[in-house]
Image (cartoon, rainbow, N blue to C red; front, side):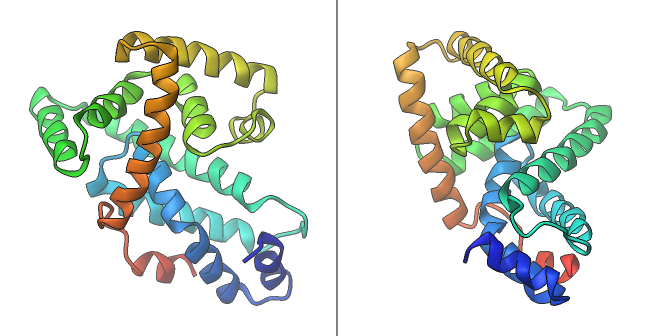
Length: 209
């Protein structure tokens, strides 16, 4: 279903139908995005639910028939994840927790290199990580990323280039291999969602209404 069709439900005071269709279309994308930004799968459902709650509130007075729902979705989800990570930072992961998370990832990623690449991405500074994930994993243009991150397209290009260089050092591979592995990692993310990797269920839809 096209975004404009979904927006038309909001504009015609059919909010519950609109949000249900929106969640149906974008939930798996939000789940993967939240995980890719560094949220542990055991916490994914809570963060995804919070994201859709905030998104649903913004839809109640949705003004623009031509607006880009996808861009708004990424922007709000990114802010929710930032808030979540700020709270988690106070608890600061112990070495034992990091070990448990690594073991958890090895159970769900079929290729150990994907585990390593995922962990290397998480070690990047957020300003580089966000840009790289949106560009390589979610196929967003510089202009779309600029809107989501609220920076200029030139700044987006700079962050992607610097993030890629930093990732190359952490992942210890050639630049061409980074492109290849990021592409294959994206496919692995999609597989994990099909294996019930995330814990989100229908309660997300109910709470977002």
